[in-house]
Length: 395
Figure 1 (cartoon, rainbow, N blue to C red):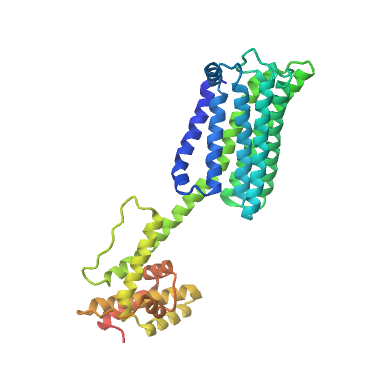
Figure 2: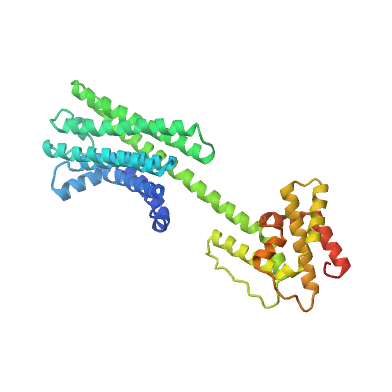
């Protein structure tokens, strides 16, 4: 593998991180979000510093032959810990237990990092090796133990990740299950990386030469595994966010009929707050619901509970379910109140509080259901026709 084979995945991970940074800035205390960002940073760092051009540059810049080796090993170890911490936070559970398990993994792998640095400092690596450090120094005192330690730590993390994700995937569905299966697939490549590296190193211990496994086969396996695993971590979170946004925009759109209805009944000169085009969907929904409740205040004097009860009975008789019948009844009362308000040249004085309006409506209601009934219910359409023919407000 040449430099671009490392730098392209690193750039892709950097782009993913850039999309996450705004959310991290606003939700710094979210352990799951912090774990995702830490994983992306470490994965990108592994690719960047494992590239042969970077290895050569770091060795030259520091003046320490082969210093890139423990650096890359430490980054791989920290990346393994980040994956374990992320899956622990992602799976959830009692907060104290989650923090305890996360600290345990972080402490253990931090200790591994310290030992890796100490072993490198004790060893002697006078010949610079950009691609085959593992096998070239496989029998060197202290360096041998350093190589074995980082491979063992990586293997343990891979086995634990596969077991945890596989077991969890059997308990969930949807995007989460897909993401977990992708992670398992990625870690199959990581296990293959460990198998090729360990085979090459053990062969060196036994006096044989399987260096090509470590030099040419293992790096592509690690790259593919890291990318697939990163996708598995990010995809469910991204898709869940997109799904939540879609649901919010859908709610905003479905409230449109009710919002327009109560605006018709609003007094002339009533100011409607215009949201900026970049306003988030959640804020738009809140504003639209607020406008609707303000409209109910203006329509309060024209609400006719008897008309509502009649519409409720007609909806039930037509086969509607209880919840749907209540929404149809509320929609019929709102539609009648709007027409009565429009037919009143002077307009009634608002004398009811919001609480009394909600009491008139029979308690808090499903605004989306009312909005849907305004547009599609034949009972509401019949009330509109009746009001148009009567030409007077309800008794």
